[in-house]
Image 1: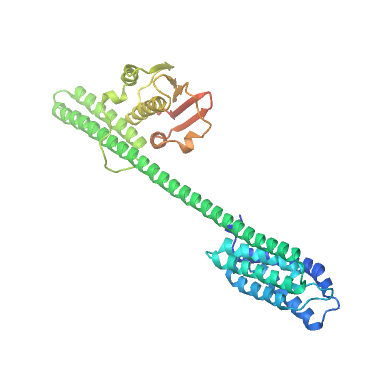
Image 2 (image 1 turned 90 degrees about the vertical axis):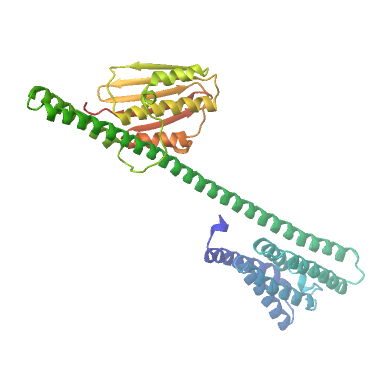
Length: 393
């Protein structure tokens, strides 16, 4: 969350932390300065304020804060002992320095310089302890070990944070690229389905116009000799024209040329489609209820595509042992197509994140004003449901 914050937000957060550090360190450290010379007290307070400012800048200017913090630490190392024989470099607020080393390693590309500064500083602190406590062997060694351990800990934590952030960013970039690719493929699937619909519009228009022209031309020839027959032919031409207009209104959404679709009478013959699946070894059954109505070209193609893609998906994802049931529910003003399988199912919302075949089916149903839903549950198989209103015939 913090990596997404703006620089001013990070500065505000670290500024609050710096104030807290300043208040807490002042209470814990300045008591040791009682009785010290004024200049020694002033230099120590300046070093404390300098380290607190570095805490405020540690995320937005980490590399600039390092030399300031190092200068403050060097000043504390060089100062004479405080009253009671305590070197200023051992005041509690000097524990801020490893935090600043961590910040430089975590937020910049510099790795060697901050570690080198920390190790050199550790060596200087040990040397200062030897000067202040000559003959005391154990305390300087212990302090040196603690100082080196703090530097190495800052380096390890900083590296871990940097690697983790880089890993998360790589995952986000990969996810973004994958989503872009998925959207492009979905758009391609929709465009392909629209090209198929556009070709079907062409087929409907060409067939209907041929019938209309033939009937009108014959009616013109028979108009004087057989007016009743001529009127009948003109009536047929009008009916064909109206049906063609109604079918094309359901498909007019695109006007693009593309690859030839799978067309012909076999495409609209569900019995032949089910038979082809059975010949492949699949257990597929077609059931119909209600009074069957004549469908337009767009609706016939949509029903065929829904059944074809649904059963194909079941065979592809479950296997030839899957059982598929196809239900056509005819109502006076509605047709509902339901395709179910007994596969393992999934908890994902396949309508929102389905494959490109599902995208094509959804687009086709949208073009004819229908509804398309896919539901799947673990252990309950998958159900594809498509329904659309039947217009006046």
